[in-house]
Image (tube, rainbow, N blue to C red; front, top):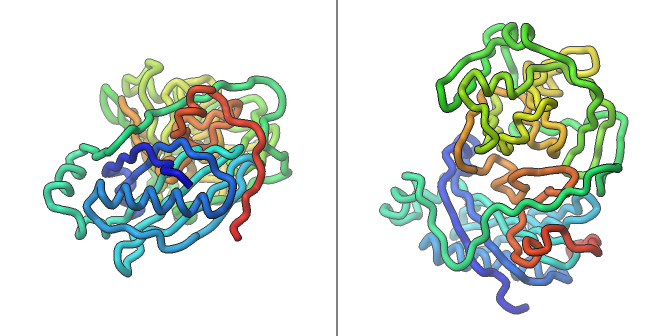
Length: 347
């Protein structure tokens, strides 16, 4: 197939240092995809471009896994290695025959392979890039009706990217950092401010939904005001006890139904469901509703969380099907996803 990568960019993400994948990269492309071989070709091309960008020879080792998500997106994940060392992963996402994005992460082992001046530049917060790279693209929503690609199920599927942590609720504190300072909230503090939401549906990016949840919690807008974050600009980064992170637009986090939840359907959160506290932002896909909270940070500019670094969308609005980042100029110009999705299974 013809060249598909228009540009790549990479940066160091301090919030992903704890899970050991602090080097984040993504590539912009405009190719069409029709077969499993096309995914592999794009992964190889992105690895070659990234090798030039970082000065480290990276190879695509093999397919780690394939997923068909939301009855629309094909995601192929390939291992990246330098010599005999697996350094990370590159993900190629497609829908309707169009490349959507190429994203991935590299581990802390990269540090020993980088030129010292480049390593210092990355650690200082400066990214490196080559070619044409797109920024954040938001899609047009389709309000009303049941969300496309979702199937209602009776109970939650439990996910824990970092594992389910042990928590001493008596000593647990939630740290909140904003423009005007830092505060710490205990579970008792949250209980004193808690309200119950009316029924809200919960939508997982993988395609399942649970209807009619009644969450008990504290409105994020009330907590944000305490640290001077009352405006609509900026981003809210959430960090979990086990090292997981995610990010959401502040304007979504400040809506009336976005809360720090401590209860569900008349009972306190269980350990599996995020006790002692979790985020709930109903308009966004479930990975934005981080469990086992330890810290909330108000940021002026965007930074990837765990799944965002692995190709998932910056905003994640359910009604727009923002499951994955858009790094294809043709899709961005349309403002909506192409029609005709179908699974493309590996050979």
